[in-house]
Amino acid sequence: MFYCSFSLSRILIQILSFGTLLLSATVYAEPQTLESFWDGDSIIGEETVPEPESDIFIDDSVLGNTPLDIHSEDLDQLEPETKPEIKHYSDDSAKKEIDIPLVVDPEDKESESDAASETGLIIKPAEESKVSDTPAEPLEAPVEAVVTEEKGYLSRFLSALTIPGFSVNGYIKNETAYRFREPRSMTKIKNILYLEAQYVPSDMLKFNAAGWGYYDHVYDLFDYQTISARLEREDKEPLVFIEDLQENKDSSVVALRELYVDIFLDDFDIRLGKQYVVWGVLEGNRVTDEINPIDFRELTLPNLIDYRIPLWTAKVDYYRDEATYQFLWIPELKFHKPAPGGSEWELLQSVEGTYFPESYKLVNSEFGVRMTTDRLFDSEIALSYFYTWDDYPVMFRHMRVMLDADPIFFPTYSRMSLWGATILKPIGKTILKGEIAYAPDKYFGIQNTTDGDGDGFLDQNGVFKKAHVRWGLGVDFNYKGMEISPAIVQWIIFAYDEPIIQDEFETTISLYLRKPLSKGRMLFELLAIYSPNYKESYMKPKVTFMMSDNFQFTAGFDLFQGEKSQFGVGVGGTAQSGNLVAIEQRARFFGNFNENDRFFVEFKYSY
Image 1 (cartoon, rainbow, N blue to C red):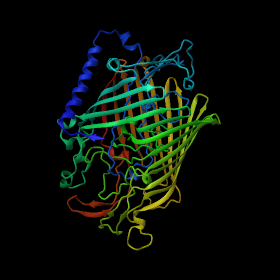
Image 2: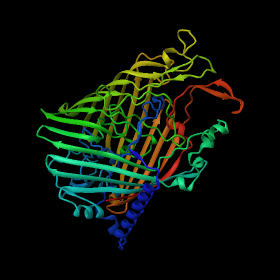
Image 3: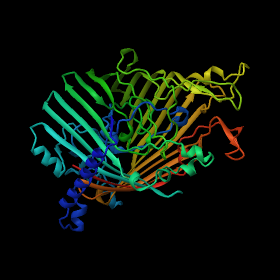
Image 4: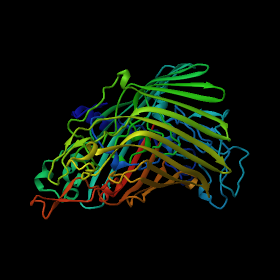
């Protein structure tokens, strides 16, 4: 990833962004009747993630097993290795139109069409489609469906100028957010240009390249401390501390997102290059899906694909005896990246002296193997093993068990083995989804007052090594045209010791709703996440309007509830007195952003 702070990249992104939006306005400037506006198919364009740096630290005790944001359109773009027999299917190529029979509810006229599904597929009723009073049956991936490409005007124009087998697509997008908690302020005016190019010289070979650039105009219009709400967020700290905080920005950025070649053989598929690999079946929850690290630059609020970090990877799929065997070799090492220091989404930052293992050394590489079959129990079952690095550093620290003692940190990234299994099981009109993973060798942080041997020093350098299991269970079903997906995820630490900061049983509950309206030209979505352990929650309702086949408008809210994390010691009396006192040690995630509630809008033109 290349970061550009110079004015040339900013000017280029701004000109291309607003120029393309003007082009879209010109194309659709012809008068339209209300009927013509609501008729026809629509496409929601694809999105990808900026590549973050890997030299910053987040403590995993803060995140725990918190599920990440769920966006159905992004799951299809991520090409999951398991393809459930449900509503959405992924494809590497441009957006497709597939004839699939629909079953709709006659009492709900607004759910007549699923045409504008955010999966990037245009679903058209087949001739034999009948009106029914039952929810849609789970669909099998169409094997011989009629497929035609749908492209924007700009994409078709660019393709006409290129050689056969070469195509270009992408999108222009504006993301704007307003925080309505004090201090009220615009917090984002980001303009994004995303480009993707594919070249298919033969049936055995395909090249793919994708990248994006963006610039956040909000920093030109508003004061940094107002945007980040520093005075309110750090109200217990001395003013000199607040004034000395970093002022890093997530702007300007130019990043290569994907660059790979696909080789298709009789029994093998090979993909070499910068890419994403998805192993999980519970959308937005990381149980077995630990391949690509996360960019927390804006927490987990962006679309699912937008906060994944791609890695240089060699992936081989071998097909034999109705099973798929996948092998991964990842020589590039990257780890979770937190938000820019000082920003409104800052949680924990880098610790000086952190040890980073070296990339592109065989001994440090990550390796994975996965077997998938649908021959057992009428289900799709996968078994996996991943020899990886924990994406959070282990916070080793040496300190005396005294209130006024400063710890000496030496954080280090550690190896971890992850054994996993997933299942997709159709049960009538419902899809049951499950995941389980076992890690025998993960480190967990302990309280600063832990001194079991009585020597006056913190035990075992501040961490205990424990085995743990994580499991998740979810269902997908349809009720009156609304897709409903509840899920539960839990971590369990074996041989638990009380000094461990993370709870022995840590549970998270999530709910995702999706309802097409107005003949598919409007889409309502709701994501809700609740942690009963920490009594914190996050909610994201949003509505997307498909103004045309290429242009869409989205509006919604990001809402947080909970209390902040607390570690170490606190300040007694006033901040200026400097009296240190013992405080409750607690790790939180969403609660740290209780004052960051915001309203957002997005404008997106796909071509």
